[in-house]
Every structure is written in C-alpha cells, then in structure tokens.
Amino acid sequence: MSQGMASRHPGPVPPADDLTADPRLQMAAGLFNAGEWYACHDVFEEIWHETQGPDRAALQGFLQIAVAHLHLQRGNQRGATLLLGEGLGRLAPFPADTLGFNLTLLRARVADRLHCLQQGNDPGALPLPVLTPAA
Image (cartoon, rainbow, N blue to C red; front, top):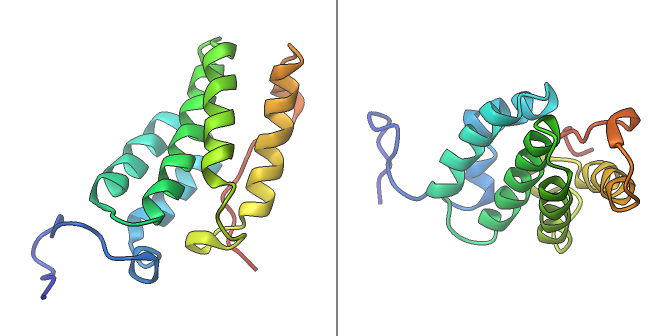
C-alpha cells in the first residue's frame, strides 16, 4: 500500500509511529500550548477524522480538553467541567508518553482544573494544560 506525497489526505493515518511524524500533530500541540483552543481543535479534529485505532481516543481526549477551555473562555463552566472530565477519562488508560507527549503533566493540570471547577471555583489562576514532549 503506497501513500503518495501528492495527496494531503491519503486516507486513514497509520498507527502512532507514523502519526507522531505528522507535522499537524506538532502544529496542534503548539496551538494548544498557546491557548488557541479553537484553532487547535480544528487541527486535532482533522487528524482525528483520519486516524484509526487506539490513538483516535487519545486525540479525542486532547480535543475535549481544548473545547473545555473554549467553553471556559465563553463562561460555560458546566460545559468545561463535563468536557475536562471526559477528556481526562479518555486519556486515563494511555501510557505517559502517548503520541510523544508528556501525559503525566497534562493529566495533572487537567485534574487540578477539573477539581477546581467541581468545587465551584474559577480555575483561571491555575496553570493551563500543556502538551510537552515526553522525556
């Protein structure tokens, strides 16, 4: 099966070894880390639509966390709480270095922000979640 360079969308993206080489993954992570939640969502969603297998669920977790922060920006704490919980749950079974990212740090920051929201507080003073390279 040949994947030509001419087509931007050759079909489903192969498993993680090749997905980590997709430049869109790093682009999405950069947007995520810059707090560009809507743009980040668009790029992750494009990759998610093309991905098959277990990595699809990890991408969905990243998407849910990004959209949760979009909800926070728009004042929808209930929506943010639900999506942070879903994103955290979706990422729970994955190894700490999934897709080349440090999920330990990501999950810790998301859990802190989720807990704050569940207590009825504003998580604005807490560090934002980030997608940093795995060690």
